[in-house]
Image (tube, rainbow, N blue to C red; front, side, top):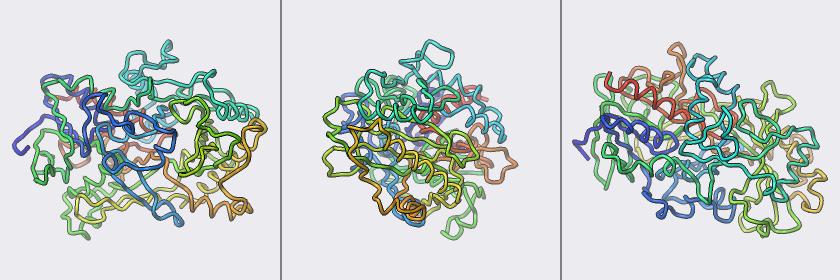
Length: 519
C-alpha cells in the first residue's frame, strides 16, 4: 500500500466510518480510503450467523465472544469489579455488526444540552434531518419526525406480537403509573413502549449492510480490511496519512485528510500512540508529545447497569421466536435524581446465565446519566496492546444511590402480579444481597457492567474548554487535516444506545465535509 494516496482516508468501518465512506464517495471527484482492522464480508450470503443476527436469543450477544470479530478489551468497572469484558466490534460494520440492534435516538434534551455547552450546530432541530435521512421507519414514516427512504430500517414489535414476559412487563409498568409510549423515538419520549431496532426480516442492518454493500462498485472507494493502523503520520502540524501493519509489513498510506472513526476506545488510543494527548503521560512512556491535548482519553462515560434474573414456569425458548430478545423498555427518572429520564429498564426474554435450562427472563436497570467519569490511558507503546480502561463506575455517590433506586424498581416490576403464573421466583441476586442497603450496594459494585456505550473520550467543545479535543466539526485542535468522527467526540453520553446517534453524527458531518472539499 505504500505510495497509495487518498483525498480522504477513514480509519474504522463502524457506525460512523461506513456512513462517512458511503456519503463522501458520492462525490466522484474525491478518492476515499476506508480501513478496517477486522474481516470483510462483501455480500449478505457471506455474513456469519453471529453477524447476521441473533442465535438462541441473548446468550449469543452476552455470552461467547468471537475473537476474530472483537477487540477483546477488558476494563476496571469499579473498586470491586476489576476485570470486566468490553466487547467492541473488529469487523466490517464495527460494533454495529455485533450489537443488540437497539436503534433509539438521542432525546431532545441530550442534543440541546450539547448545543448549550458551546456546540451550537448540534441542537435537536439541527440533528433531526439527519436522523430522518438515515432511516426507513416501518411504523411511523407518515410524519415529520421519521424518515421513509433511508438505508437503515427501523422496526418495533407490534402489540399482537408481544410475548408473555413482554405483556406482563407492560401491564406492570402501566399499573405502576408509567405512561404507554408507542414511539420511543419521539423527541421527549418516556414511559413504557416497544424498542425500535434495526433488525428486520431476520437481518441485523449494520452500517456495513445498509451503507457499504450497495456502493462497493464505486471506483473512487477503496475498502481495506484486516489492516491495523498503528499511528497517524504528522508533518509540520498536519496529518499526512497513517502507518499500518498488513501481512506483517509496516506501510504508510498517505492522504490529504485523515478521519479517525475507530470508536471511543481505539480513536483516543491512536491519537496517543501518534503523540497527541496528555504530554506528561506520553513522556513517561517514551513517546515524544507532538501536541499536548490533555482531554484525550478523559471523560469516559457509559450506561452502567445491574440485572435481576427471574425463574419462569416454562422455558422462554418454548415461546415463539421474537427475533430480537428484547421487545419493550421503560424510560423513567430515579426518585432522587436531579436530571430527568436517567433510568432505563428493559424486558429481556432470556437469561444471560450460561448452562441454564432457558427458564427465566431478565430485567436490567441502566443508569443513563452517570456523573462518574472514567479514563483511558496507554498501557505501552505497542500498538497491538490494548489501552488501560477504567470506567470508574460509582465514584460519585449519587450514581450508586440512583442505580440502587432503579434496581428496586426492577424488583417491583418483576414481583408485580402481572407476572403471576409466569414468574416462579427471583434467581439473582440472592436474599443475602437484598438484606440491607449496604449489602445491595456491595452487590451492585461487584456486578455492575458496561452498557456497551463507551463515549466522550475525545469530546467536542469550544476552544476555551481545555479538555475539548475536537471542534464541533470533528477537527482536532492544533492539527490540520485530522478529524475524529465517532462516539468518542460526543460532548456527553445521551440517554440511549449510541448506534443511531453516531450514524446521525456521521451523516451530519458528511454534509460539512462535502461542502469543504476542494477549498
